[in-house]
Amino acid sequence: MQFDHFNFKEYDGLMSIEELRALRLRKKKIESDKKARKYILEINQRYRKMSARKSSNFLRNMNPFKKAA
Image 1 (cartoon, rainbow, N blue to C red):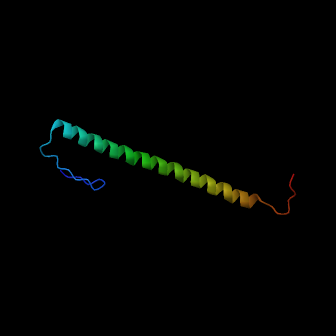
Image 2 (cartoon, helix red, strand yellow):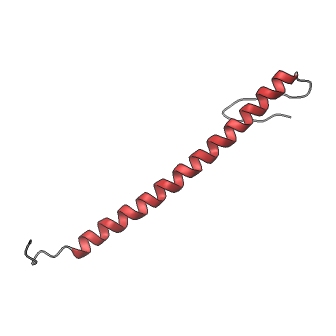
């Protein structure tokens, strides 16, 4: 079996226990990195949505003829 993550290729036909353990740990790390990037992307999208809403509301509510308190 070959996999190509970040230009890394490895054959796991006849591997030692340590090599299999290291391979499994690398795969887990790659999966956890993917989950972390997805989570950060979701947070950034929510923040952009909130900030866009705030800026549009600010411009909509701004009245040049209204006196400041």
